[in-house]
Amino acid sequence: MGNPGDYTFIRSSHPTGSPALGVGGRGPLVIAACASARGLAEAVAARYRDLSAARAGAGNSGPGSPQADSLPVLLPDIEHSFSDTETGIRLPCHVGGSDVFLLQCLYNPAEGIGVNQNYLPFLLAARAFRENGAAHVTAVLPYLAYARQDKPTRFRREPTSARLLADLSVEAGIDGLISWAPHSTQLRGFYGRIPVHLLDPLNMFLREFEHFRGQDRVLAVAPDAGAAKMVSHFGRELSVDFAVVSKRRPRPEAVEVTSVIGDFSGKTTAVVLDDMISTAGTVHSVIQELLGRSGIREVHVAAGHNLCQQAALERIRELHEGGALSTLVTTDSIPQSEAFRRLPFFQVRSLADMLCRTINRVHFGRSVSEVFLRD
Image 1 (cartoon, rainbow, N blue to C red):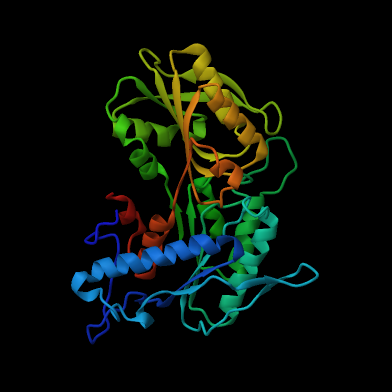
Image 2 (tube, rainbow, N blue to C red):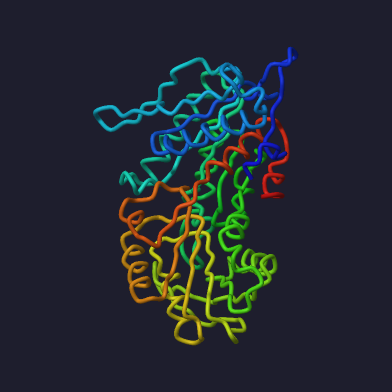
């Protein structure tokens, strides 16, 4: 991705032939952000401009081309707080008829801002755009909070909280959703008839561990049954064997490995892939199990999201200092805390390019899946 001729990024033209990079059939393109997503929104908008200029070609990328009014409008400062802690939303310009992509990082450990504090500004912003005439409002929520509450715990009296937040989002005014590496794909059904684009982390994982392709010593590991399908695709694509861990939770936030299914013969390196690291209880238990029953000496971990919890920091640091964990790779779906960023073996991959290309294709009414067909 990033090749100027890449067909996964689209340009259109005004009838006069001048560039219309941010104007599709859905209206002028607006990339907006609540406070916690400001940095990510700025990165997405910058990437959009870079790809637009690259697609225009070297001959059309000088001063004044593409035209300023054809580029996406960036609105990164629409959220503020009143003295009583109420959230205020104010749009700085006319948005009537616009195609708005509203970014929000629903969890922001870098600033100590929790999920509930971030969800309300997102809902209010969606309503603000709708009440002020936006033609479309697509929510871009890289980390879809409450996704793990997609059904009540068995034999427990609990709400389906993920469904409630979906209902609130649609009622607030969104008519589309883009999210990254969700905990459960059944969330798609909670949003009714609106289009939902759930971006898969498989391509990112494949790029990250391409250097292991075809190596007999490498084993891809699914830390639970939920990750088994994705890890099996990963293993087949890179021509490495894979294993699946079976686990149970005797109590909340506690993990107990019950079995591991796979052939460990001759394996010295494990690649553990998961959608999320919360307290790192699963990662810690899985790595301890791998080291205790096989010849595994080197472990690499990649996750779509890292929640930056203190318990995870301590467990991850312990694993690395003990020589078990070589690298941990995640994304900026959640603003990463400084404590994690200081870890020398910790790497963060930006979602700006993928989100930019996805926004571009939704804006022009094209297939989002094509973003994942080439790298």
